[in-house]
Length: 450
Image (cartoon, helix red, strand yellow):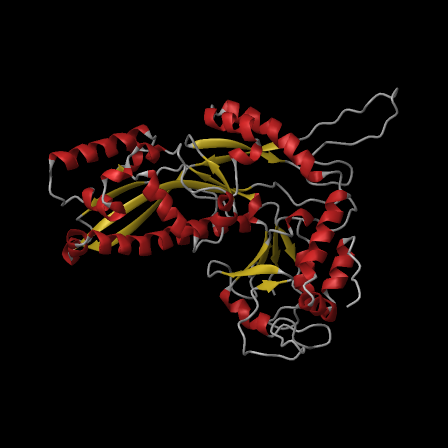
């Protein structure tokens, strides 16, 4: 097929995406992702070296804030390996943290996670060995800064394993930027920037001067985002016979229900949280861009609106962004038509409609994630296009567990209480006006109400 011209502006990108035939051809020839990457590279190259400036400015401010918060290990990591060593995307690093409070506990003394939960069970047979273990766990919980949570500190090996399982069902945490919290509150730098028309990063201006001319002054404006370790409590009711009779079956039971529950309630807060006593969800981000819904009929969406959403994403985020949609958006996607009226999402190789194969898992080359925590179709935010690398998750990385016979006594069950402490906040303060003064750009884009 003939070579497609690379779009150099938002309007050119929208024009390309609204041409259903061109998009289908690009997909068929495997060129679509190359076009998107080339567009992102062009914009980044012509917007005053955005990535290099971010790195330099954030490193300086991060050093200051780590110093103020007495984050000694964070300062050492920053000096040794730079910004990425302090706050890395969770998929890039091991979940196990050797510096977490629970890492001091030798997990080998327990017969796996099930054996650990049997030992902390209130009805377990009391022995000198068990009491010594429980005393050490209690002391570890207290020294970790989690005495108010009560219970016993979970060894880091077990916490990491539960977290790994929860990542398989979570939307936000696997894609967000994780900030380990050594204290209950961490102050983290936030770029306070609204426009790239005259400067970048809230005040950095570039000038061309001759050798003898005086240089102009410029300053970058950084905001601060506070991450507070809010308490998330999860209860798991377990039959007493299961706890008593089989550590393996008990461990399987806990590995099944707890990670899914943890991921569910964390994710709901990371997406929709109010920020009061809980994380502030990315759907409430100040930087969010809402694209007007132009669908003429209820329960429908248009290719043009999806193309507009795509064009409002930060160009440097296009290669890692994802669509997050409500389950009842699927029928509208399945019937999505192009300018000529033909299907563009569920389409056979020849161009006709088909329902015989597995539906595509992408829109414009980016993955589609279906979540029940997203508003229903026709409500604002039923379709979201987001780069969750701009969402911060503060993780205290200390989990405690305790058991009680009282709540489910009549049912012959024990209630296990797991407590973890996390926070979440969008990292960008506002949407950005690009250098060409076009429509604002953001890592958080939603489709408005119909």
